[in-house]
Image 1 (cartoon, one colour):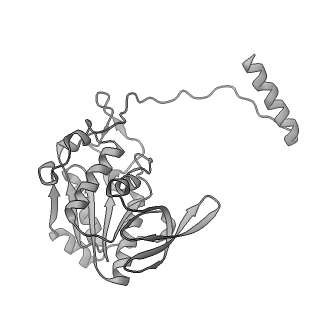
Image 2 (image 1 turned 180 degrees about the horizontal axis):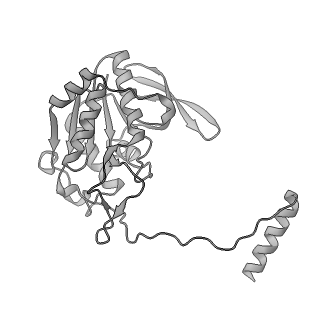
Image 3 (image 1 turned 30 degrees about the vertical axis):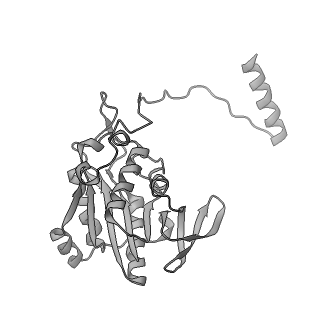
Length: 260
């Protein structure tokens, strides 16, 4: 089973700084890590390889330093790493990012499964995984908490819901986004760490991928950050007490007063 895992390198802090001119993250001086949800995607891919054979390829889009995230994935047990890196991709929103990653996946060739973390900790949109499946025109299952069965052509998974789960069967190739309930990521072995140091990381630029220049970077991003600000703290407020019917009546009266 040939599996591709899409990961992202994110700041290891919630106190990110924003460039006031470009409204993009300032990563200088901030330690970066693999997006926590992507660690579960890497682990699940390695477990599937251990069960069914094949290989695990890890793909990320980012600056040159994202090379370290790929090496960490290799130290865990992934077979190879691919970095999509070019100034032409800078400023991509989730749509342009998913388009670019889909182009890189096409460059890699045949695959059976793509696994992503459910969302990135620095954006929280949960849009890139589904976007990749859209560009590749393959089925997607989001919020997967368990892989029940897998064959060459089908996969049965449990998809997490707010109050339970549902069983979904999907044909392969397909894309899954996984939640943290699916496994516990392993700690790299010494042998894995040594292998990661010498691993060859392949870089794809716009020249190799030959993507539509109107669909990448800022130019290809239909959404852009216009303004970033911290909301003012709420003041006042009122706590309603009593039985539910009484609270409902009080709330209706308050709304009427505000409208009038």
